[in-house]
Image 1: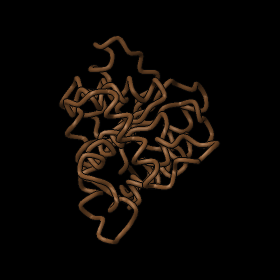
Image 2: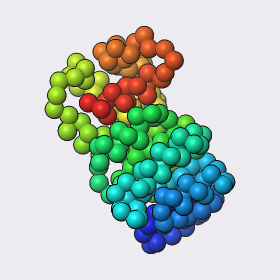
Image 3: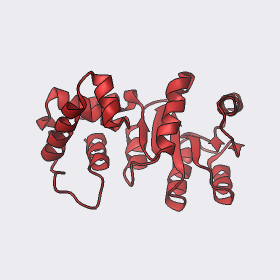
Image 4: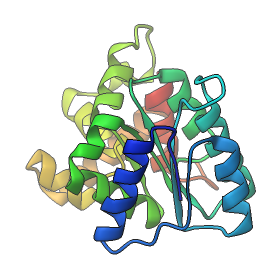
Length: 211
């Protein structure tokens, strides 16, 4: 299901997804209609713009959060024109699974956009690389991330984008065992080594985004 107030972009997404073999159950222009449609016939995934009528502030984000609360098995991909740190943290703070945050420009890169949908549908996360970079730049206070080596920060940045260990290894041109070693070190330095009941990968990503 899609929620986008721009008719041109909405219809373009519908056509793109249909051409790639996906079924679009509903395409609406506001967050309220998206929530109503999702509750009536839960989809595998919703794609929603953050800013929509009537105030064009955070209606789409609030709809996404409502869907995640009421329908936790439905994946959510939020689109934003610009990086908005508070919105990213709000979206990911409860659960960083089946969720994505992409800049709208990324939609034009069709392969990456479709890959993000597949990752979310599979239970993972898809966070735009530019979102991650800008969140890091805005971090100015001393925190546990300061203890990480440059390579560990590279690995954590890849993790924050929702990549698997294998994908991280390929993207950084290092071995899979090196990725696993770096992740274990990251978990230790972020005091997540003995965490039980929660995914350490998810907690590490949240610690990263909140820094």
